[in-house]
Image (tube, rainbow, N blue to C red; front, side, top):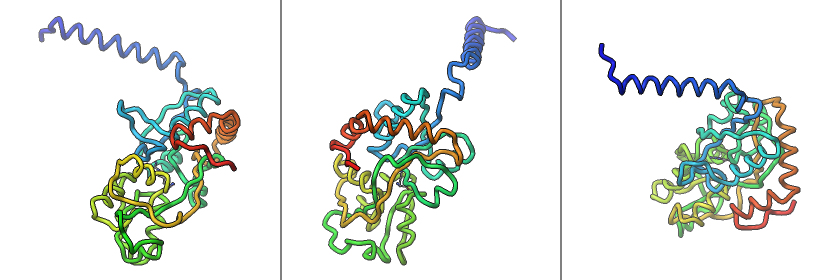
Length: 258
Ligand code: ARG
């Protein structure tokens, strides 16, 4: 077999590259001690989404990067389906998840949460000018779209005779409503309001009162020794004005005073 010069060069270059990669791994530049792998489902603006250049952006992303800075850790985000975040924490493939995730009793059975970092709640969205849906009771027997694995999905599943369709992310559920294929979406109010305000999803409205009061927390594996570190960083971020700055950046308002 004749080895051409270019093939020889290519192999030589590939060999050098992989030697370099191996050397970089061995140098301790990014040992797992210094790196936190953080899972998020980045289809949930303004908390997390994929920016124009493929980078993850949003309030949660900025918040966790600030936590990393305070804790001396490099943060590596991983974009995962929402319903696989808790299994990934349990399996130890990620160190934490920040994803607008509500602290619930059920989730607390399997993971640990940081202190709450954001107050939210569920709201019903309908097509503009819908007169007959004001409360959860009004959704009986209706078609409801939700994001899989969410508190919104749990709430929809409790509505008698409702026909619940699940989607991989909230924007897809809201688009289904915008297209007129379902009667309502049950989703976190801040995310739905953002979709309306940005014009990302046309022709929909939020109705009535919030259905629930929920607090978001950062989830970590059960018994994780990082919980204290994360809480300490969060407290610092709130105290030194970083939290207020991020809140203004992503919500265009002052953060609520607790
Ligand atoms: N807060 C809701 C929950 O915990 C919805 C969160 C959805 N987050 C996301 N990144 N898609 O179930």
